[in-house]
Image (cartoon, rainbow, N blue to C red; front, side, top):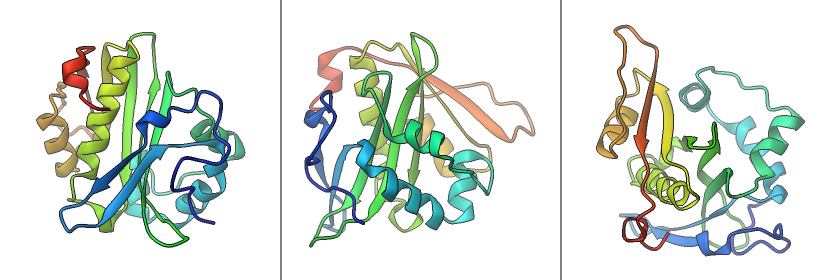
Length: 194
């Protein structure tokens, strides 16, 4: 079952169609980005089942992740303001494949926690940066003032990305998980065309 590539057939009433976008990778491949909808639950479950241990460990800090029905509903039934997820997928033919997902979820009235996962074969193409930048802009526009994130201390790529995007924290020596945060802007000029 492929992801619904273009505007979903039966999106929720509050579905933010303005967040749909094409993305061209440096090698010319075109990807499609759109908000996750409840109809994506089956595909998301299949992606979790197919994910390699390293990807699961990098995202959830454990090599196994129990995707219960409640968790699957949480990951796909979103309000698009306090909880938003963007899926990145391939474009072509009748099938599309999930490539990455980025999300934020409110922790408090002012702070959201952001997270991204990119399939190994699509890493180092700028997808992670694009997702984080879009999530930062959308969360700022939604009125949140900070975004927090966590990554494994051994994940040098995540550390470079977070630092380059203005996230900072006070990591402890021998820390396994690094927690970082950054202020958000509500300046429309900084948000751009998100």
